[in-house]
Length: 196
Image (cartoon, rainbow, N blue to C red; front, top):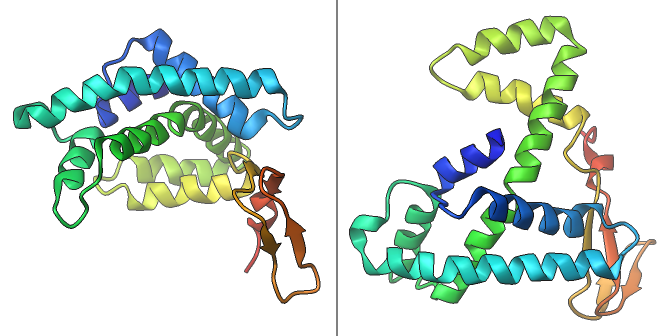
């Protein structure tokens, strides 16, 4: 519930708690936890995305129509940015971006808090320094402790994605691999956490 409240406050969402949690869980499960590629998990994610879009479209349209309705939250700033003639983002694209904000916030925030704390609790000296940094007005030093803790225990060590079009990964290297549209791909980013 804490990450949910953070999202509602910082992003400016007013959808019911139960809906936000359901949408977040379903999309995160499909994107990061569905290693077997279970069709029912993908189907639940698509349904959650459709529900999210159905709720967001009138919400965003109403905010676009009333300049006083866009506050200094993430959605309000994105709406103002989308209206900039240099950006000119369609309402449909704006909804897609807001869906991405929501889908990537609640579950990952909760996991990041737990995993960063676990790493800091395992290192009492670092924990003491992080607590001192948390009391400073400028969050920069504290952020460094959190990011370093997450390097040791990232939110996810891989991201599952689908290939959009036929192509080659690693062109010109000994490990060049041909891929086909629709094929699943696991990008194993966790292995890079200790690269120079």
